[in-house]
Image 1 (tube, rainbow, N blue to C red):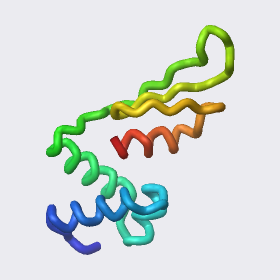
Image 2 (cartoon, rainbow, N blue to C red):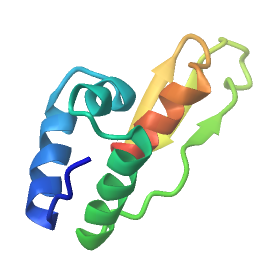
Image 3 (cartoon, rainbow, N blue to C red):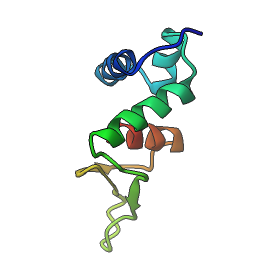
Image 4 (cartoon, rainbow, N blue to C red):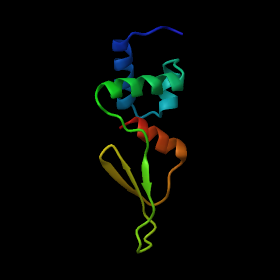
Length: 95
């Protein structure tokens, strides 16, 4: 695999963020290990002050409407069902 410098990783992470692909699919399309892409995304975001480490998931409201509320990075999503853990993990990397 090719060694890349910080500026190259910045460009790769920006392209990944702009794509409609999952982290894994984008990494594979670039011949990069998904874990390496996640590492650099986190490293570069930490430098910018984004330090989200988890996705907070709230249960349905007391009225039992069945909605799941997901808060991450100042954004709140209201979902009809709990998404797969992989999706939540990917969401956390996008903070």
